[in-house]
Image (cartoon, rainbow, N blue to C red; front, side, top):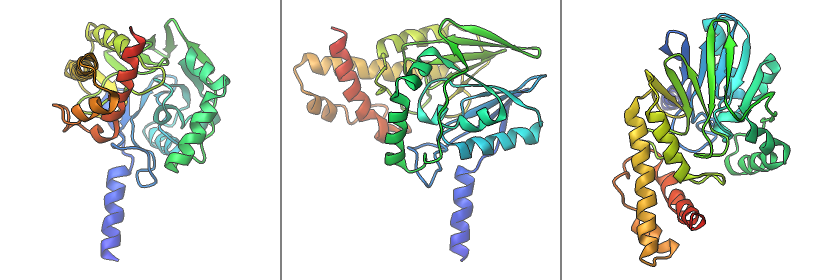
Length: 298
């Protein structure tokens, strides 16, 4: 019984939710690392609450309605005011699939115009069905389309707070948004730090992604608030650029030498980034994706 209690406490410590204040009016739920599983409840990404004079603005929903409700409960402990807007930085499951409780709250859902198209053409339901079969934690997910779509940038004025929403596509996906609140930039999965970014989305453009990172590096900000990991500075932008550039250059070099994909993957198993989080889960997928992407750039 003592061992079981210790294990339960350990799991709770790793996958429980405790909000961290990262700015005077910004709170963060920091997820763990790994792919979604019953053990981690799908709590593998970050969500943020911005407290304004009129209510909360949430950035990214977490993976499931259960996690979203837990996050909402924690926000309401800080201040019991309505959630007015929820903004998805992109359409991946750990940033959007928890949307239902926010809609139940009456929040307006803000996302890229391409996310609405993704929902309306049936692709979202197909992805959800696949995720339910693959991971076993998405059974209660109910998806909703955006109420407000962004394709050219916009500003939301909520109380005294001006929230700037900037499309940065294509890059990690074709739905990426960067949100600026004062001196803080919410960048979703456009930036990682010592965590391998996922380059395998069907709408990825690593070439354009590098251009987006150049744009981000020129913006003045106090902290980057990423989809995974702790708040960071420009070192995270540089690290992400280094990884993407490394994969692109090495895959291109090996392709030019006439190697086939399996040979390229074998040659790039051991890299300077091998000690980064999510290396085993994403790196080989990234090599395969970039191998095919480079063909399309010819």
